[in-house]
Image (cartoon, rainbow over all chains, first blue to last red; front, top):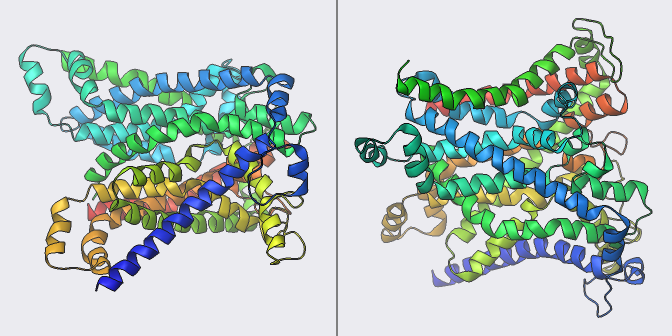
Length: 280
Length: 289
């Protein structure tokens, strides 16, 4: 029995090591190539390591393009998307969970938000590009934040809905006895105890914008309005690029992701744990 | 109107307005234009009834795209969910700093932008300078570099591979959460009875998480089926349409060929195809819940 257990452990560790290697090797290649001089890149390297490193690729990316402008555009859109999603999904989810016994249709909010989440992005991007043209939101950062919300809002709704359903009613009742209104309860009682799931939703909304390519591609035309994803694409189209420069751009764009993934795993995990308690 | 009704109205109206703006109006647009011969940049268009639908459904494109979408969606979803389950099961029992570091590392690909992932893999799989071909040649496994993204037989497999690389951690996250939601007493009772790992999984863990497993599998399928970004950035649907799925075809028809009406039709068809598994899924989960 003991041998079996040891064998089991060995298999597990080999599996984990392989998994970590599969993730780390490509990432290491990306970061390495962004610092490696062209002659190493063009001679075909195997191991992403060298003592000869250079900052040329970064200098080219930062000086020959509107990189910082694009970067800040992306951050603005991400900020807007977070600012739209947190309050909207909280108030819908609150009303939907608190009054669902009295007004039955509100029960459908959870499944309905999942349904919206499943609509392919292109089905919405296609009409949004036309419709936003009519209402002046085409080629506009606010328009892009709204478009990204079509993807961020449904899952945010679903996560918060799952969480709010699990908050015991007694928690609010004490506040009602003290004469608090619904709004006060929502802001002063519910929101503070929901901080983890609200953080999860915020992270998710940020990630939707940061990852997005489709909506940016269909909605943004002017170079000054590019989010960073389109900016990198511009590098490929308009500029005779080398892999080093592209990898430098890709690395710069991945930096916030590294920071996010430290928090994202923890908070998204928490959010989904709450949902899976409801789904069984 | 009492205070309660006013609260409901005030909290639901602005979100409803918002959802109308970004979901309902756009969807009605697509439905509307799918019955027209609208061309982008042209004001005038005619109603042509079901003509778009008939010509699309009877074209060879339809079969090719449906096949590609299902192949991509299903294979990637199955790989992601099964690998995700293995990772979740392995990591679930570990604790301490090392396991946290591993979890964060495994989660990195999911939070990297599609364009970074696509560029990275286009570099790794590059014919002339890519490290993967360098390795294959160095190890003597191949004589000529493999054209991972430009060979009609390999492109789809490569795209699936990159998708699995990037998105498996999301399945891992959901299944890990499902495992954490299993009451601890369940495991403890089984441990006292002396159950081995495999038995434990079969009789204790699996019954608790199987619903979440199928939900994850299903969500991954829907997600892959409708995803545009990764395939577009890796192959643009090529070579020779071998990786062309519904979203790619919609985009090409609308923005490369300017046939907006037809693109709307293809988008609606893809939505209708998704409806079948969706309704089945809702029905099945409701029965059990």
